[in-house]
Structures are given as structure tokens and as C-alpha cells.
Length: 116
Image 1 (cartoon, rainbow, N blue to C red):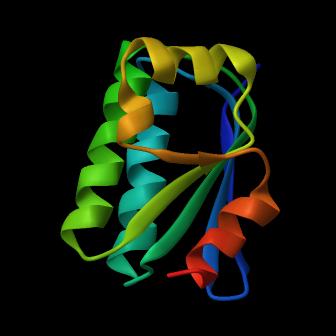
Image 2: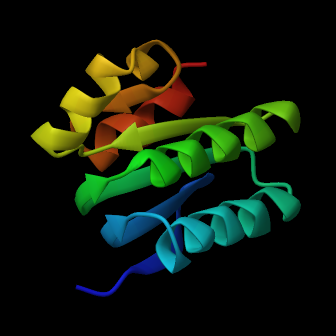
């Protein structure tokens, strides 16, 4: 399965849909490129929709952490939405659930920004 991404707006939140595996190589680089591009447009509320991501390796995880740090440094926030069980387990094992706010679906993640 090839990797792809789609950037769209929902209210004042930018949603990035990822499809495929986030692994060493072009897909991890695509995550970095897309999030950097969105952050450079001064978008501060970002939801990464991982509904169609079934696997993330250590390089992909590193890119998510890097994206989080870049957005946080510019005063923004990243939320994760619609995690597959495997991805959710990975965040638990690595204790990154303490870093990333994750939500069961996109609507909940978008709504969380309104509660600030």
C-alpha cells in the first residue's frame, strides 16, 4: 500500500489525513514535509487523522515526535485521532500517550480545540 496524505480544514482546525504505513523512507519524510508545510502557514490547531494508518515504525514515530515539537515550538498543538489498536498500543508501550492527546474520532479531536 502506498502512502498518501490529505490536508483539509474543519472550522479553524487543520486536519491531516494519513493513509498507509508511516515507516522509514518516503512515508516518514512525507509526514515531516506535510506537517512543516502546515506549521509554516501559521496553522496552530492540527489534528492528525490516523484512521487509515495500520503501522508506524520507530522512524515514523520519530517523525511524529519531531512534528509535535515543531508545532509546539510555534505555539500550536497537535492532536491524534482515530488510532488503530496497534498504534494505540505503541503509544502505551513507549509512554508517548503522555505527550500526544489522542481521541477516538476526528470530531472529538476537533472539538477539543474549542474547549481551550
